[in-house]
Length: 120
View 1 (cartoon, rainbow, N blue to C red):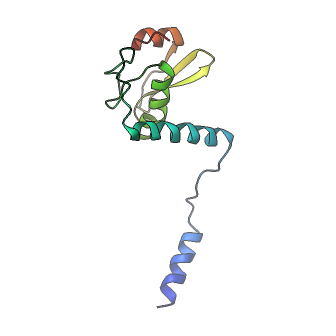
View 2 (cartoon, helix red, strand yellow):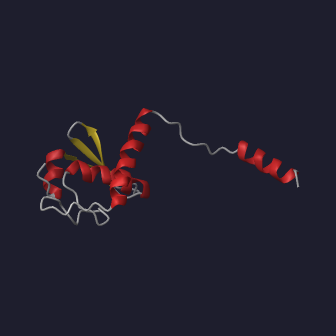
């Protein structure tokens, strides 16, 4: 009886699986994603005339700005291995894909605005 919890405790303590260390970037990303998930949970669909619908991997949501859409992709699509856009330099984005042999795609902010139909 007493031996089983002791063995389980030792097995967990010696496990090589540890949570990733929290650095400044992880904390900032977590805060941004927490806010984005709260907005998504409220069911905000931005039904005004300026919001864009039917975007790739938007999961039924509408977005008023490119930044909202890119944040949505980073927080919701990236964890499930869907493509998303990462800013590599100011105003320059690279699409992150986890497919074997996928060629990296680079686009400027202006190109993404045109591609997805945003005005700002």
